[in-house]
Length: 219
Image 1 (tube, helix red, strand yellow):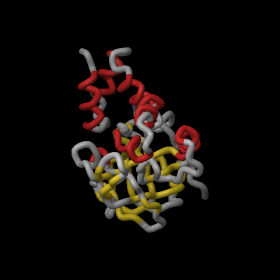
Image 2 (cartoon, helix red, strand yellow):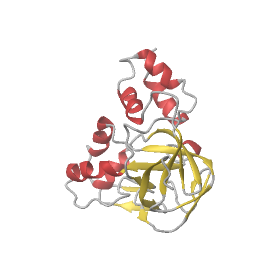
Image 3 (cartoon, rainbow, N blue to C red):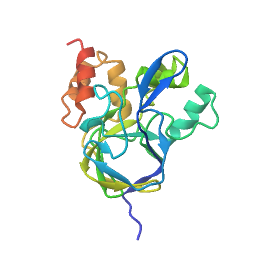
Image 4 (tube, rainbow, N blue to C red):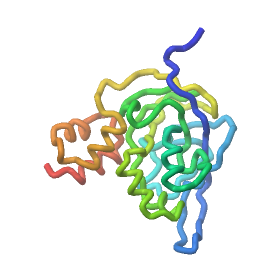
């Protein structure tokens, strides 16, 4: 029997150790150079076992335990960067997922992948390291402006997942804030103050994103 709750598939999985990079411009540390893997991955409340984060102040933690990106964004980024092919994981995501994107994923959606139950917590807030990685200073700004950021999950139930696992919708969030909506509000917080207030007060919203939005609100 088919499962009508299956909404997507994991097309690629990525993890990495923190690497020290000397790119001729600066020396920096990052976990963004991900390695594709077909292994069965163990997932704990703070992320995937074996995956490292270099800047724990701005990345990682329970609200940013797993970073997912839309497969459909890759042709756009590939064209922008003039890199063909642009391999999955290039944007440092742990999961590259088909069929889901910033428009149809909402804060608070609950997904099951393998035996892991995940809750969408917030958009990714792109940092300077993306531009540095590709030696393209405007790339971080492009991601921010376009809203093609991907999203973070918090872990509701620990377990295991792997590439080619189905994404099952356990519960659709009872709110009207897609990842795209949240990104737009962060870029334009004072355009609709009431909507911004509603997003800030959303219980399921990740604390890092809530803090970023609060800093920008002129209330």
